[in-house]
Amino acid sequence: MVFQSVLVSLTLLGLPLAILAPSYVWQSNQSSQDQLTVNLSRYLDQIGTRDLGHTRQAVSNWQRVYAPESEISIDQRERRIYHSGSVDANWQLYSHARSAGGLYVSLHSSALPVIWSAVGAVCAVLICGAVALGAGTGFAFRGSRRLAAPLIYLSAQAEQIGSGAVQAHIQPTGIEEIDLVSEELSRSGERIIGRIAKERQFASDVTHQLRTPLTALSMRIEEIEYLTDDQEVRSETEACLEQVERITQVVEDLKKRAAQANHGNTQAVKIEDIFRQQKNEWASQFAAVGREIVFDNPVTDRLPLATPSSLSQAIATLVENSLKYGAGTVTVSTRKGVSSRSIFVEVTDEGEGVSEEIAPHIFRRGVSGHGSSGIGLALAKDLIEADGGRIELTSRQPVVFTISLSAVSEAMSPDRLLPQGGLVVVGRRHGRK
Image (tube, rainbow, N blue to C red; front, top):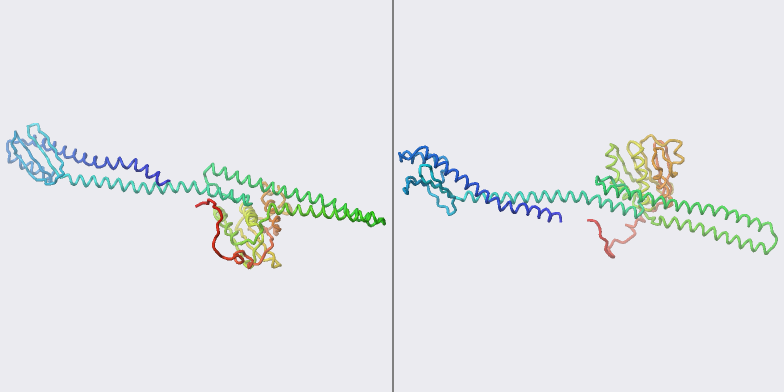
């Protein structure tokens, strides 16, 4: 579409130019020859024609200088007094003039050089048009890609929010409208995860509030059962205890279902893919402030069990904190746990560290030592814990955040377990090119 638009514009401009250029070249050469003929007639008026021998010699010298390849004829009262040169070309330029002394001067020259000049002008127009077409198409494609790329990133950000990565980091594009939409998507993502966290906290609080009185009730019933000797009372207390146990189990099941509904996509995650994605996202931002971020994965024999988007988001939150509030090189690495079914992901930097007052509450919502919202680390904690993991501040100075996750052997990777075969596509999804 871009190419067609540029082509139409150049055609509307170049076609008239290609038509007018030969005409201009012809008219320009014709005007030059007409002026040359007029100059010759004036020259004849100056030298006079009383001495024809002298006149012919003067005209011959003039022709040798100004029109060596032309045919000149001079007539005086129907009598030709001078004729020199010969033009055999079929295409000729013809000019004539009458001097003040009554001499009729005519000048013929070949039009072939003029025709070739006209052809050259047309070729120049075509070449310039082709160059302009290429340059215009290139600039147009570059401009369209400059506009399309942020839209693709915006779509990816929306897709990440839909998959659970609610704080996808998209650098400002410089296009105000797209940046506004991106910021609103980020705010919406934070609100969504905030609501999910509140719902999960509510479920946890309700579970806790119900479990406590149920436990107390169970103890009271057991006490009654212990103190009474009435068989009928004992049977009733046993029935009550069974009902209390069922209610307690229902509460636990509801809590588990709420957690699974929010994050039920735990799988064996390739940590190299997570690190690669994070490096692509953050390397340029660290380089822009003269810092470095290093990703190191020496643990290759086990894979963490997590929701990919949740783990990626948690690491991104820790890296962002190190970028904003830390210093020096940031290192994201893995290490093995004591058990073969555990793995740790550590994020550390070379900054001043976390103050002793804030450290115990750093994952509490609203707690921040730098005036920020204090939501990021709390959300990261919710995401990791929803996958059955744990996130901790294991060192205040230097700062070391540790994510603890369950792990499986690398031999359990889907790439190893699933057969490699043809790709079966059901339906169609319009993707980006």
